[in-house]
Image (cartoon, helix red, strand yellow):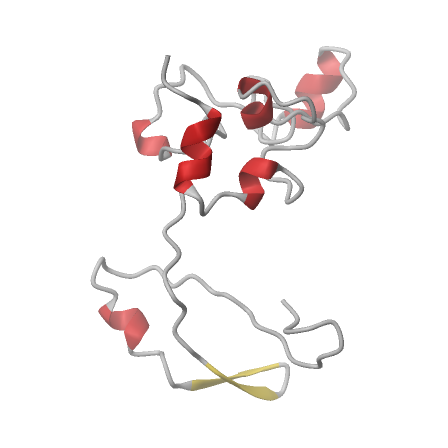
Amino acid sequence: MRTSAHSDTCVAWVDICDSVAGTSARSYIGKTIVIGGRNCQIRGAAPRPGSALCTRCMRWGHHSSVCRSKGIHCPLCGLPHSEAAHQEYCAHSKRDPDTRSCVNCSAAGKTKRDHSAMDTSCPFWQNRFDRDWLRRQFPKK
């Protein structure tokens, strides 16, 4: 991400899979790596405790390991197939493969849902770090 519209510098985020304590990841902080012939310093990022996106049902608020959905859902159209099978499934069911539908916006009754669940224009994606906002979208009955 560019640091500003007129800047020639940018910030890149990289997730380092590590133990819960993060001891190996912390050892990289302050070190320098070369990217594209330029020296880049590694800095620690402030943790942003967001809400999990389930890769099984594509809904925010839980991890796929605890998902209660009976099957997987496509992140592009929300129908019951994988993203890899999207083109074939939608063509077979005479549905336009370019049609997008967000499972989160549909479930919350939002009027604008013509985007995928992972689209940056989705209000759920934009508020993924705001757990209170996410909870308010699905009040308990």
